[in-house]
Length: 131
Image 1 (tube, rainbow, N blue to C red):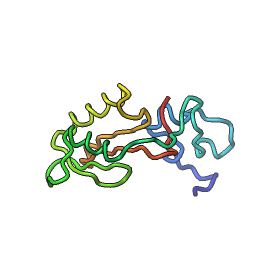
Image 2: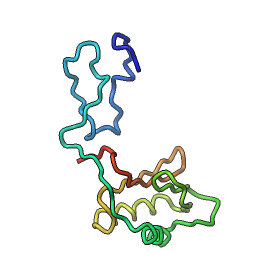
Image 3: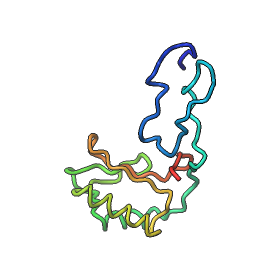
């Protein structure tokens, strides 16, 4: 916790990934302006997703997920390591296309982190989602 009278500008700024999830408008809260991150009016909070895990993993394997390989980009599902892909851009593109065509739940998030060389897939409830 930061004291409310401390000038800490990094704690008061919103990260670009917060766009659409958190409100960037500063309200007159005295010295605590920006320390409280308020949900945007249009943001949504994820709920439980009904997903057949075995079928989902088989679909991921058809898209290029390899459970045996040791070289490539690591793939994590809800924090658990599930395998490696050789072509992460194509893999992520296929998952996003399936989500957009309602073959996968709309609340499924997928992120390709180039710096950490991993792909994160998340369906956990309680995440702040963009509208």
